[in-house]
Length: 350
Image (tube, rainbow, N blue to C red; front, side):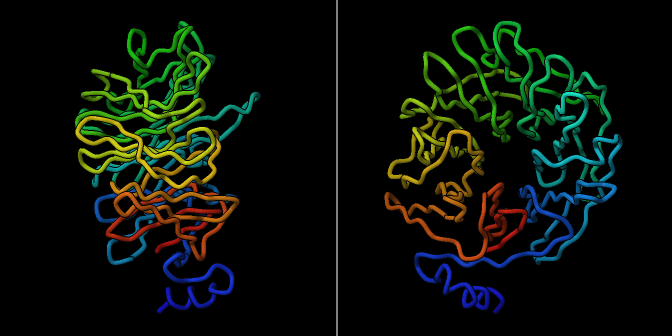
């Protein structure tokens, strides 16, 4: 009934029908930032500006029940952190937070682990994620070999390397990227944008700068932080980037852009291929797209502040205009057959 009322109220603005999707807003204590699946539940990372503890974590169960997961910061910047990445294997939770501060206004990073019983910051030395060689943190992944944090760090050869941190107890330690495909050199610079668990390891989506081109790429480890390989994504034009990445069993998808328009790639049978017929929706290479929603490569994104959903039915694509949410889509997830979207600091459910 509520969904019907929302549709009726918005019909004059956006319309409801085969070319429009209506969503209902879920009001939460805090502004939603990220959503991710935790088994058959949804995790919602929120921020509560002006409160003593800014980061919050909420679980929405399969029955729609909303519950608070206690969050315990251990540092002043942890109390102010905003979520950059959240991952869960259905039981464990791994999150990356950050807030700018200090004389140079660099991000002060914090890493959090826990379960639905509670999430706690694991206090680290400043040089773990900060200091002269620091880059950024781009992703979090819980793998069978343990949790990994993906980011960047000053390269010994050129620019920044893609960097991996692993946990030893409560202490996070940056691993050496030298001699691996994560290392930049004078010919090729490596950049990471997001990460997701895959089989025994992790996939990292990003781009390479090489030969005057900006090339979308995916780095893959075979087991935890070992056995790294890199694949340049095909049919990538001149300026392209791989942004959001997600997997469903052995099938994975990447959302990004090629020469200013939406591009999607799918991994099946161990091979990456660009998805044909993708709608030519404008996307800047600097836009941080949410990962595809499902293995059919359903994509949620914004065009001029209007939220749209691109769906494929075989080789045929449709683009639905969403009734309800507006603004930039920052996160999206599908849990229990329900699609959730975070846009303009609000959470919506189809």
